[in-house]
Length: 347
Image 1: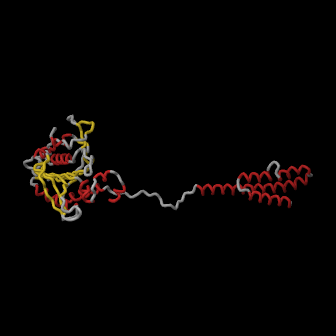
Image 2: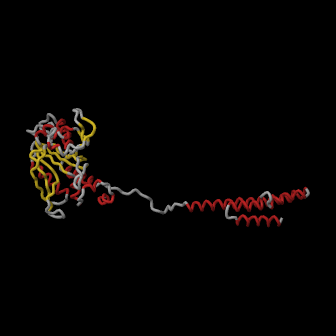
Image 3: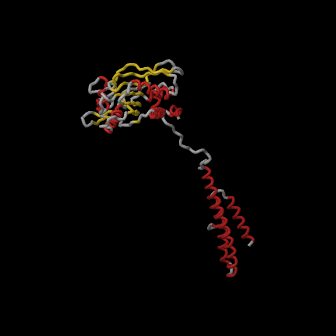
């Protein structure tokens, strides 16, 4: 029996020295293979008597079971070691910071439009919205810009392959004035027959399109137009409203406004509005910020109103240019190039 115990210990040592599954199978063959030591002992039972076979066979079987148990245990150890090595090689460092989605922010022009809406909203102006693909009548004719009028030359630039009910090509609106027309016509229809129609106060911000592309112009740009129509609205009201707006928008009273006579087919008389700051980097420079004027009688008629009774003013300004002045940006194209390094400054 002592010889079998020695054999078991020898097998334990041989299995423990095996560093790979292949080496372990070689060690197994020395003890449990066809020519293994335990196999040879089993073959030697044939020369023993019946009683000796029972006793010796039981001892050998018990030793064989212990050796097989040692083999199974070592196989499990090697498999676990191989798995750990693989996991270590393919490990992910879960202690690294996660890749969180960066925090975004409003585009600077969007900020400007929201600021414009808030200021005029406090003055009682509604905000109108409308389609960016417009009819020829809404974009031009309703605004006293008939076909072949020379004032169209800089505006009727982008068209789509669709026609309106009158056979005219639809266009990408060159200004947001059609929204004023739509709003005013709806307002006039709603209050038709009333002795005193409520005043129309509305601004119309949105995207517009013209063939322009340089440091201060873009083929797609933003415009915000305003309209105030009533029975006793004058140029004095326009000056008061726009002066108040500019001072609140730029957060300073240190600026002046001037109204230069100009021409627009939809207003008469018409004026360009310039501002000059009394302090800061733009001190002393006159800068054009808007066009304005008293709404032309033909346009008032196209609103569905009587120009002998209803008068008022309109103005149009570029939020893009106001954004440039507010933040000191000298190239309009930077707003639309999608450079996050530039846009992140306004977040």
